[in-house]
Figure (cartoon, rainbow, N blue to C red):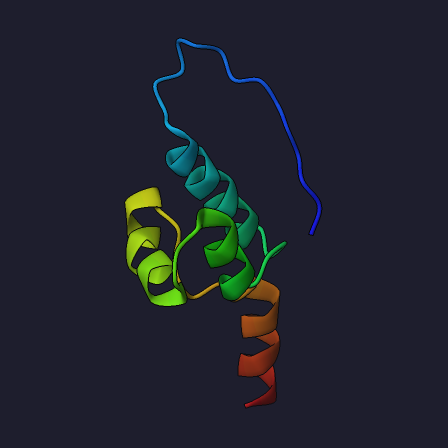
Length: 75
């Protein structure tokens, strides 16, 4: 895993944990990370991460619409 360091302006009222959660949820939402990888970045268990996804308006069911359409067609 690689490390990334960046500067956040002082007026951004978020702690490191919240920033990690924001990054993890967005990467999970975009299918760039698995649930386990996103949870690890956020510093949480898979269960805790899953329970918090709704707070960030991210569905735990990270299933692309294109896959759903294909599955319906093949049913």
